Image 1 (cartoon, rainbow, N blue to C red):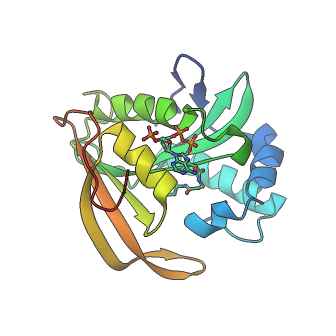
Image 2 (image 1 turned 45 degrees about the horizontal axis):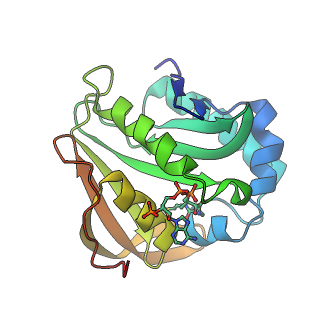
Image 3 (image 1 turned 90 degrees about the vertical axis):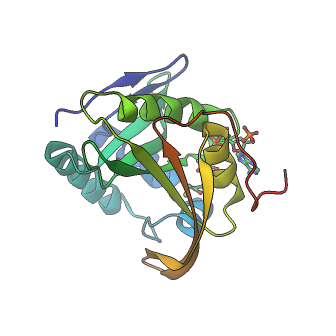
Length: 188
Ligand SMILES: CC(C)(COP(=O)(O)OP(=O)(O)OC[C@H]1O[C@@H](n2cnc3c(N)ncnc32)[C@H](O)[C@@H]1OP(=O)(O)O)[C@@H](O)C(=O)NCCC(=O)NCCS
């Protein structure tokens, strides 16, 4: 698939490129990133280079569609659809640079990705899944704000380079209202 650029009120989402590598490497030093994601730790510049090569190949294959989230042309985060099955489903994943968090950027970017995913062309998805390591409240709150419905716990269901973890799972169907629903794992 040709990489697609998405635009929102404050952000541009486009394929990550070589000039993003330093910003990605710097942001990946935040311990919250390996704590909750599958990114390598320690994270070196070579990891960013490998990631950029794989991202281009996966856009080409149409299996994983990953966007750099940009504010005023600066890289501030990453969001993607993984395991894309056209006409079926995919899993959403995201992480933000610590300096760009709590400003609503993630939810703004994710709404654009979800609209793209559910549009009849080119993906026509019916369902988007979200998974996170049990205890990841910021990610849960983000998914809940987007309209995802909590579906349960995947016992030892998530794997990262650091081991296996219990996971929370949620889903959003094309026909679902995007109004936030109560999540039993979140207190507020
Ligand atoms: C999860 C993450 C991407 C959220 O990004 P963000 O830009 O801060 O998100 P937003 O500003 O759009 O906020 C989205 C929701 O999360 C909530 N939130 C964000 N950070 C939070 C925190 N530290 N504690 C509690 N809630 C938090 C916001 O309040 C908002 O929920 P609300 O609408 O119910 O108020 C970011 O915290 C991150 O990169 N974390 C580390 C990596 C990670 O966990 N990735 C997800 C793996 S599944």
